[in-house]
Image (tube, rainbow, N blue to C red; front, side, top):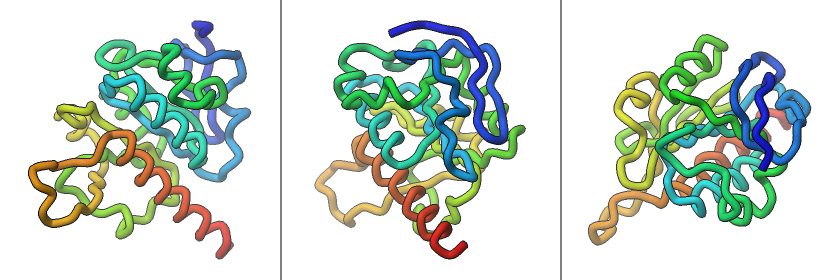
Length: 193
């Protein structure tokens, strides 16, 4: 893993001077093939297997990058790389000092920021086709309270009524379902245009 500092860009915005952990020096903009950005944000995801699975799914569902914290979550390790099936060497990963400040900045760039947390709206009832970021929280605590307050909306996945004490999906499974729904809605929109 090579640590570099440079400008990460997408079609509509740019994050300058963020430390990035990627296996090559390709700029973020070269990965933008869609009209609207989709950014995954891992707010304190601690298990490297979960982070790798989220990165893999994000790539396959058309995300333009993933943002992780410098501290308070899994970094890019060989386990993450293996769990991502190599996606970590393709999808740009930005490590930021403060997820809350990053959410504020994304919103300034007209990116709608959702967090995945219980008690929100089901993703099937939301229009997820515009520029957006989806924040996935840590395995035990979910999205941090400050970041949750900063987000524009909350998405929740419906579950069976009686789950025998299990109250949430695994973070990588939830990320997969949400990212797939975003990709599905965007594909339907593209067919109509």
